[in-house]
Image 1 (cartoon, rainbow, N blue to C red):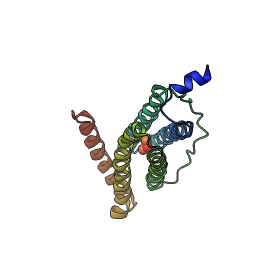
Image 2: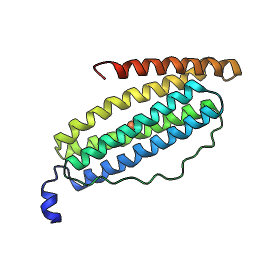
Image 3: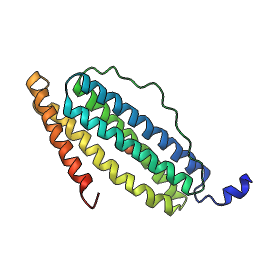
Image 4: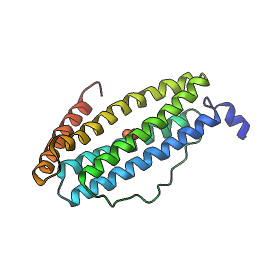
Length: 183
Ligand code: FEO
């Protein structure tokens, strides 16, 4: 029965494994962003909290997109366990720097999958992953812009207030982009 099922699988077992690892990474990213949102909420950074709640939702959507793809291709998507998430952040800057690191980690993992499926001539998965390549470009750019705000404005009370305001504008831009017909 297993052999019969496997014949219907378009993706290789190695690719299935890599995609399931990506599912776990996206789930972890979603949980990390939720912890960041909670810290921002507790410290009065309302716009930053909203930003990270939205990021958490996006990461869950990414996870589900890959999850469904694995199953649609005849593989078996694995519901990921999420380890304990660090919630002891030092500062708002610390949070945005961790978020940039996290996005870079995700981009590298996606590049590994793209390399793998290119070598295997798995054009279906290569095409599927292109969406994530573009998404990561945008996600990294957003995270970098946020980190740059701290270099630009500093970290005193007024600067942090202004940064949270700027993040509010970023939230509005993200909401407008999501509402656009091309999103
Ligand atoms: Fe889905 Fe930002 O990684």
